[in-house]
Amino acid sequence: MSYELLTGLSLITIGLSGILILSGLVLIKLGKREWHRRAMLTASILALLFLVFYGIKYFSYPPKPYEGPMKGLYLFVLISHSILAAINLPLAVVTVFFGLTGRLEKHRKVAPYTAGVWIYVAITGWLIYAFLSIG
Ligand code: HEM
Image (cartoon, rainbow, N blue to C red):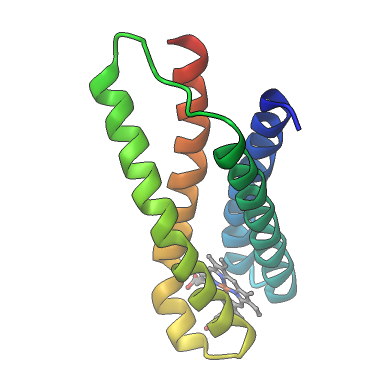
């Protein structure tokens, strides 16, 4: 797969995943539990697909350096994105597990952090792409 195709697929999967997390939050606030479950599980599948595309790209192409004027800001976004993306994986597993097994008190405790981290990772994923395209 070409670099451009992998980049496009990564952006689409992580972006849709973030939008579905936001939708899932709205749905649970509206009391739509079944739709909340569907939105969050679809978001999780898209995030797994993102990991596949990202993995293929990581092992097939060298990383693209940022050569623009905002190096400090870029590095802050890149490093915070990478750390939180790694944290997001166990958080997501635990949150989905508590949701699916009906441990709702625990689910409600951890889920807001998961949702926040997830959305940050999705937005900064797009930001990194924007930095590399402009810079
Ligand atoms: C990444 C995945 C998920 C995230 C980020 C997430 C997020 C949340 C959040 C923030 C709440 C609390 C809403 C509030 O207190 O107003 C909530 C509640 C809930 N979630 Fe999830 N959720 C996820 C996956 C799931 C899954 C897979 C299920 C499966 C059934 C589920 C079932 C529920 C239920 C039933 C509630 C209501 C709990 C209650 O009323 O006490 N969630 N979720």
